[in-house]
Length: 372
Ligand SMILES: Cc1cc2nc3c(=O)[nH]c(=O)nc-3n(C[C@H](O)[C@H](O)[C@H](O)COP(=O)(O)OP(=O)(O)OC[C@H]3O[C@@H](n4cnc5c(N)ncnc54)[C@H](O)[C@@H]3O)c2cc1C
Ligand code: SF4
Ligand code: SF4
Image 1: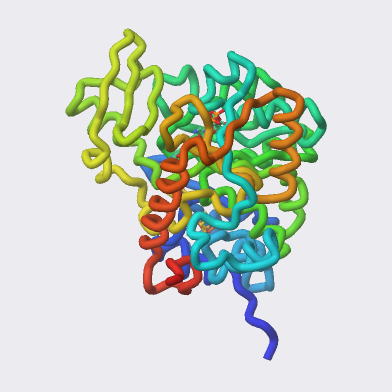
Image 2: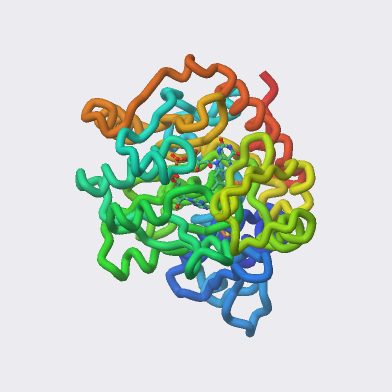
């Protein structure tokens, strides 16, 4: 029997329409025939087939042997042990609920402006600037706000300079499939690209590489993950923040999540919205996601813990360690041991366990909690 050719039909049935699809856009970016599109309006963050003849779940190229989309999807079949094996030489063990780690430390950018504009310690922006200046990358896929920022619609984009990187700094808590900016980066000549993305997106480059999804994977030179338990529907701005709290999005200056949704207004006011009120606006693609800690990034970053202006920094790969050590040595960032805040590490583990419990019984069991 020839091996089964797994293509869009299988991806559509097993991931896109089953609830597993995160909207990471890995499949869209990998499609060599450009027949996959991406809907990011009306709260939908999903891939779709652009040719209608065979229905939404059919693909003529797939029928003729193309398998790129299933090879690029971090939720298709046994993605997790395949990527663990490829990145770390082994699957994660029972206690590694947050993924395989080398070091967990706290960091912050030494440059005051980078630190101020960053969401937590400004580490992500500091890494991107440093990696550009030291030839590790020539572009980064990041997230901007559309237009003048008053709609708070997060959109993927390319950063090629310090100014671009700082314009994208900070967190937006709605979804932005930064992978979608890949073509734009390539069109502008980028050869070594960093991806900044939520946990779901940071599994895209290694899954593409290990499953040989095509030439797209070769340009991903650095993979920075953002810890993430969920993103919210864009509608949360009108339907909760404005309708209940009278906070028009055009007047919002900054937001953060630290136990509550913190909202700073342009007029200087500060508001807190309890997270339990926000849950009904959880984006559909997040509801079954098992990965809190961006387990397949080179470096994963988060804001939990008692030090508000430091970034919790999880170093996973040799490349991640090399970059962080060099940045510490040349003073670009400051560091302190993770032991300074054991509560943050404990919380990361607790939230990782919580996310793993969301993985559904109908899917392959690997990402579930493994009993120790
Ligand atoms: C939606 C979301 C949920 C998060 N949830 C948690 C959490 O539960 N616990 C936790 O500890 N940390 C969480 N984080 C991570 C945290 O908010 C910071 O991004 C992280 O600590 C890095 O901070 P920094 O100051 O080093 O990064 P910065 O220097 O501020 O850089 C942040 C980078 O993230 C990119 N970015 C911003 N918003 C988005 C978005 N919506 N989608 C994709 N890329 C984006 C920016 O373009 C920028 O490059 C979340 C982040 C996001 C975006
Ligand atoms: S999870 Fe990502 S790669 Fe998989 S089908 Fe959804 S958008 Fe495509
Ligand atoms: S919870 Fe975060 S990492 Fe998981 S699918 Fe949602 S956005 Fe992606």
